[in-house]
Length: 276
Image 1 (tube, rainbow, N blue to C red):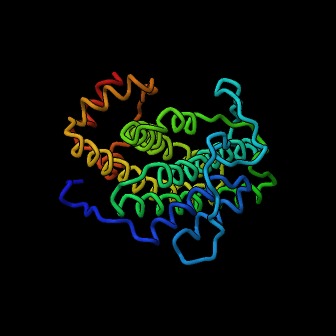
Image 2 (tube, rainbow, N blue to C red; image 1 turned 135 degrees about the vertical axis):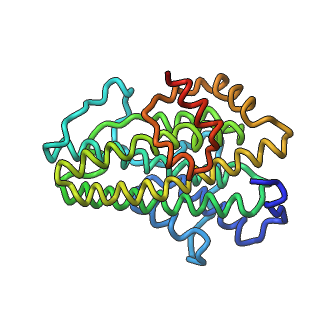
């Protein structure tokens, strides 16, 4: 995103209120209410957004379950059984739940940015809430619910690491962790389809299509921030990956989805070379 393409102006009262509403939704632990509040941000609904962040507040607000464990403790099951498919869908639902919180967090945490920045990430938050809701409804149709299986917290752990660094947040979350979801989605979708879970495959199609847009938003604002700071985007990312101990991204890669999300050919070439 060229710096000339972004108009920086005083935030309107609506946007200031929207950022307060984002914090309110972020602090909310009930998953249904969090999704409802997220969908209502900025639509004029009467939301009690009087929540004030306290330094010792527990972020994000989340339910007592699922139990959060290390990735090594998570069990993998085949998708030929209903329980196996539920385990896989639950893992994706947990990612989407974290993604809601990540989008809400970037909206309220980082101030003084262009109005378009907040509008972009509020759109992401609403779509992530829709993804989570679809996945949870499908889990319920299979006889399970969100929280029935353990999960890990890698996405939010990276949010904590980058809580005072917008450039780091953009490099590590949308450009690294969420972009990895673009690679992982097609094979998971195929497994669900082959197992006869047509609804699960359909949901994955929706998520992939919209996640491409989310990663594209992260890419645009990452490059905008680099321009604003006079940084070379490639060099800056190398420094940030080392600083935040970024996980190594392994193939196979969904190169077409990454292109649509704004990665250029030089970036994709380096990605493939690093994987060899």
